[in-house]
Image 1 (cartoon, rainbow, N blue to C red):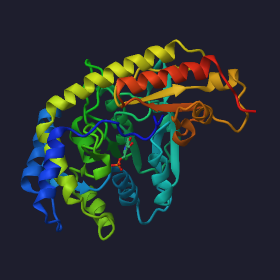
Image 2: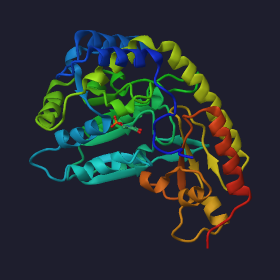
Image 3: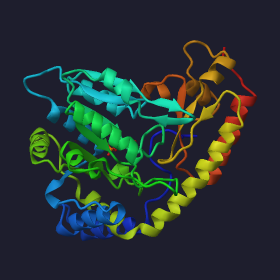
Length: 367
Ligand SMILES: Cc1ncc(COP(=O)(O)O)c(C=O)c1O
């Protein structure tokens, strides 16, 4: 059962499919560009969802967020300083770990901390990992894989830290519309204040929320003109335009899918609650509460020890022998953990949880 790659099993919202059908029926597939109605739709959405007044000039369209992360690394790099360095907290979505190396930059990591059963940014660890040449902080907000919706107080601490070291903050907010806790709201990092906005590159997309990541439509929001120019310069001649079908899907997603989105959140909450209750009742496994995303971050180190898994067998590999395809925590900088994608039909999740119970309670460890 594939519970790994971070997309959901659900069909895209009917309005998105209808927009795509209409665009396909048009029959002409020449070059395209974001049209005014799409740009207005995105700006309206950001104003409605976050009360964020973004100017059209701040938008840079991208075929993917990972592209945006990699462009950011290269654009923040100082031509005179090959060892500028990129800082991020771990565990984290693997392309955060790869992007600095792709851009020939040293990667500096600081571990997130678990305090009273909740993941926290560890500012002291970030301070210790930050070198004089460090120029960039990659922030995952909400966080994949630990499922935190960072609070205003935490973001202020981060912004203060970034100001002390004069860091650009690249805030990957691809999961921002998947806040599952009803008492929490997503606050874009750039909305903290003028100073945070000036040092920010925010990356967003309809991909996760409306389950259209394969179409490839996303955008950066860069209020600071200097940063934006450097970003655009790195893209030049390398990063392709967003494809015309993705543009049509994006417009419909942000404009016409509010009810579908609410229904989705209800279903994901139910799945999250089922998964949390099951894991809490199983020996050797533990997880913290998932505030946002459809991803659960499960500590399986005690299970691995209890089962005496062979040295070269990760918990993810063991679960795979039992028919469960989780993502391996090692790829996120945390061996012994697994990430479970619960963006699936409740019935399928039920089957997966039966398998999980069997795998833990009736272990069969390969020799
Ligand atoms: C935090 C985060 N950023 C980016 C992406 C991928 O973005 P894209 O497919 O637009 O490159 C993912 C997908 O899992 C993700 O979790």
